[in-house]
Image (tube, rainbow, N blue to C red):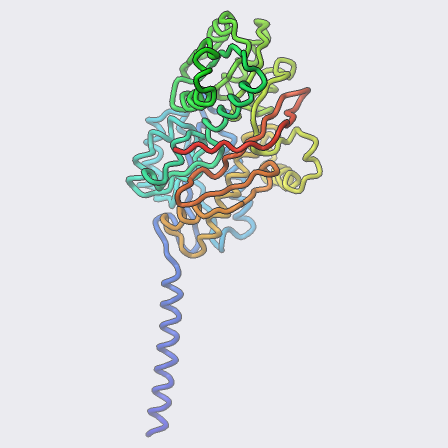
Length: 409
């Protein structure tokens, strides 16, 4: 009998340990809606149609990249289910699509949805619902506000930082400049404009001779360019999305207006802006960059560029390598994959934001040398560095140093 009791006690101990181990393993796995042992549901909203449809390539690149990840086994054994909807760059449609993704599709997060007005329309909703609005595809300064909007984070350098860098360059190189500004009449355009005015300081009042705004629904901006030329401006700050950026470059050549032309980074794509406008018309245009440019020969032996081009050839052969949207989509998708890997088996929305806010010197190798991604609980601006570049021949040429331009929300 004693031996039987001993055997029973030993069996009970083994059983207890097995149960404890299995419950511990179960306890380690935490899921919110959109996550399971086999799947991570990611929502996305892009302007596949409408006035900003040139940006749709970003969503298509991300879809191709996530398929590549899935084909290689997924993230910690889980496949990405990427659900991307069209909002035609229309904020009411964005609201509709966000509600569908959160309430019907039950995604874990909404990732890299495009545009300042569209993201502004769902900003409060996403934070009220406590669903990550992660790595939004817009550089508006307000995305860096972890105190009031802890569920929203940007990715690219913010617009005010970019135009402050242009302002510094103008004040140093062209202190007597007469500046004409064309900007989109919404949060996106006004954010860029504020950065320029803040960067110029008191001198801006006399240096800016004309500010022209246009509506995103306008078919053309030709009349605004005629007015800007007539103002006598010898520096042109071009704050436009790709369709209108191409129009501006082309029209300036037609009317013989040759100011020093600054073009915002979000429209600096060779494939979707410069080439359609005409290489000759774009000579000397200045912009700023944070990712490598496929058309720049200096990257031909670069490991990160080779990896990107191999991805384009194999996984996204229909994509245009010269379109800046493809390399941006690739880089931001890589950043999300890193965050999800770090989440491990704790795929809660809270942990997604915690990991996204814990990136230290992370690099996707499509970023320019010297630029890295850094976030913290009080800093939701992952990339805050840029380098100036000038268009020459059929490509951009970088010049000057990598410049930091931190502007808080």
